[in-house]
Image (cartoon, rainbow, N blue to C red; front, top):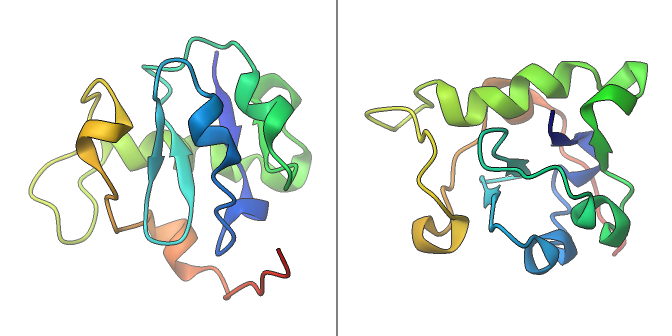
Amino acid sequence: MTYVIGSACVDVMDKSCVGECPVDCIYEGARSLYINPDECVDCGACKLICRMDAIHWEGDLPDDQQRHLADNAAFFHQTLPGRNAPLGSPGGAAAVGRVGVDTPLVAAMAAQRSDH
């Protein structure tokens, strides 16, 4: 089981969750953050701190956010545009830095305005 970042993060990326994650498993795409399902220890610290209410435990995902479960995993398991291989499980987001690309689902989403 893992936590999933949904559409409320797109174009906002508050990043309060990044510093709270004890295993550094929240990676930065171009427009959204993604939780690595293989590195997440299911502690819930990210959900508690998220000011955007964008993070949900996969078993509690609202119906309108279900597509983000597979999409979040795809960020790590599929070869994304402009990359030679899947990101996989590099063992920590800090060492990787900003990935700078998103999954096709997030990339195709309409731009969201942030008031935060």
